[in-house]
Amino acid sequence: MTISLTRRAALTGAAALPLAAGTALPAAAEAHGGGKPGLPRARGFALGEMSVTTLLDGTIPRDGAKAIFGGGASDADFARVSAENFIPADMAQFFFTPTLVESGGQKILFDTGLGQGGIATALAEAGVSPDQIDVVVITHMHPDHIGGMMTDGVPTFPNARYVTGRVEYDFWSKMDPGNRVGDLVASNVAPMAEKMSFLEDGGAVAPGITAMASFGHTPGHMGFMLESAGQRLVLTADLANHYVWSFAHPEWEVRFDMDKAAATASRRKVLGMLAAERVPMIGYHMPFPAAGFVETRGAGFRFVPVSYQMM
Ligand SMILES: [Zn+2]
Image 1: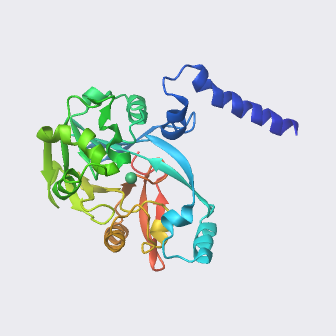
Image 2 (image 1 turned 180 degrees about the vertical axis):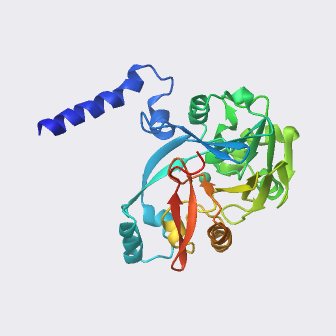
Image 3 (image 1 turned 120 degrees about the vertical axis):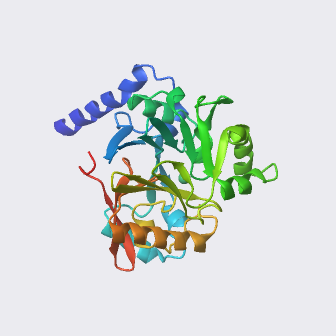
């Protein structure tokens, strides 16, 4: 009893510290975009001559995991796969993880987070300020990826040029007013259109960084292949949105996937390639630091989180 009280007191003390230190984030933003106090926000990896850093913009628990990630699964199957992987079946911890790639003297940021300040905090932990970002790449235009493009109506990354998929931009920029995502694209993305270049499948962001169409989650969703000095890594973005359920059963429908069948086909194709060729991946919603490997397991796959590879 003494020990547990002591530990609880210690945890409470640790949790209170950042607030006592006077963080500028309001309480709601801290809960949503802030992550756990003390949780690292930036993790660097070496890939050939590139430096790759995952940036934790935020993390939050959500109830109703089966309804979000288990479309088409029986309750029994969903519970069994969860138990086999040591996670609860009734909640999911969401992570939001933009990635910074430094290559050829350029700082290239993939996605910008929820727009609650987490990305600036994570970048600061990596020793980078927003005005140092040369290129912002948008994998797709859901709010948790474009929310951080603007801060109080002003571009968060004032010196950046922008890159995104042609199909994705054309889809969302033609929405009628009143669509939640379309309205956010109008306020956060469209103002940058003249500094933006638009990619087709296979198009290059910079030398060694190539777009890989993986449509389904959204109409123009794209991942990116990084290649440097013979090493490869794929930024899969929102191809697979839960590290257990979406890998074990790529066919289980995910509420956020706009075209369920296309999303499943993209998961099978890309995860199959990553497993066969033993290429590491970074997934935007994987548990931080969001990097790992893929192996085949039965009729599906398994995500193998990174440990000390690529240090
Ligand atoms: Zn997302």
